[in-house]
Image (cartoon, rainbow, N blue to C red):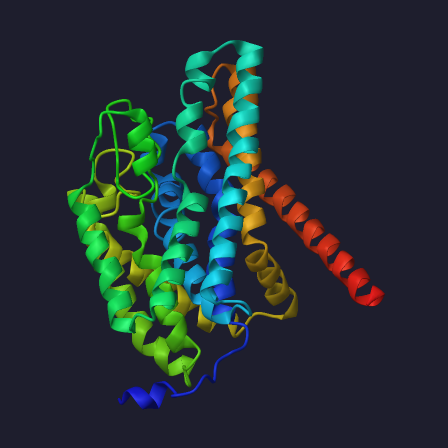
Amino acid sequence: MKFNELFSETECNIGRQRELDLAKAIPVLFLPFVHTVIECAGEETLLHGFPFVLDCFIGGPMSAPMFMFAMGIGVHFAIYNEPKDLVIRALKLAGIGYLLNVFRFLLPYLAGYAISHDAEQFLVPLWYRFFGNDILQFAPLGLLCIALFKKLKLSKGKMLAIPAVTLLIGWALIGIDFQSPVLNTALGYILPTEDATELVVSDFPLLNWLIFPVYGYVFGYYLRRLKDKDRFYRIVTPAALAVCIIYFPLAIKYEWGMFGPGENAYYHMTGYDGIVFLCVVLSMLGLCWFVSKHLNGFLSHFILRISRGMTAFYCLHWVFVRVITNVILYLVNGTQELPEPQIYLLSLAICIVTTILVFLQQDFKARVLKKKEAAV
């Protein structure tokens, strides 16, 4: 098979990418289940059954790597995608990230402390969580790197090489401790920092995770030139799935990478996890492409709206999860742990309410835009 049999020299695939919408929508809808299970289930519960699947798979390689890869792809399909546009978008995302932290950490935790005077539950972790590095802190850094690469007009080869090198460096530095909460938190945006308190939030250090938005960006370049999606995904998907099927059972058995000890084993990603996570992403895109071809109008529209409202969904669901579990349940019951059936009911309720609010917000924005267009 020749390269030009699959790819055109000019852009020919410029419409909505249905597989991308579905590959984002599925993990987004599971986020309330993932995070509620993590907050409300005991450690033993998370080691088995569906909680284990939610924590280690749906909430792991199927989520953040997919979202960041999709963000990189999306740069090629955005109307405004010049470096300065990406810088503006990055700044907006950073603002959203810290605004989210006001409503999921600062205000709820201060309210919880005012009611309970429990400093260990609410005040001690507040600084780390508010200023820590979560995905809405990492995403702007990823966009800024893509903007820089575009500005420098780097070749595709160099764009592929740089994140591979940074991942190897980040891998070598896993667990680095600067013996200072301030330095560990500040440098945790770039490096995989940890300390003895296990309070430092360095969830998506740039060195380890840059590979996903940048590789997504390169993938997006070729996706716009892809002539035959069926043939492409028939080739890529089985190979990527085979890697996942072989790797994950071995990784679980021998505690490799993300299945190793410590809460940061997933976030402080190793080199081989990075390769396998890319295979998970490609598997999802291929499977979602073939599934999306058979979805009817209602489901397609529903998936499209969830995909477009991904950031709003992420923010809203986190506010509900944190306020309900960390504050309300803790203050009422003295613990945030729940029986497994109640966890799923709470997760479902949060998912439904969040979806409704996201759709209402989208409808409101559409009405406002329609009025502005009518006024012109």
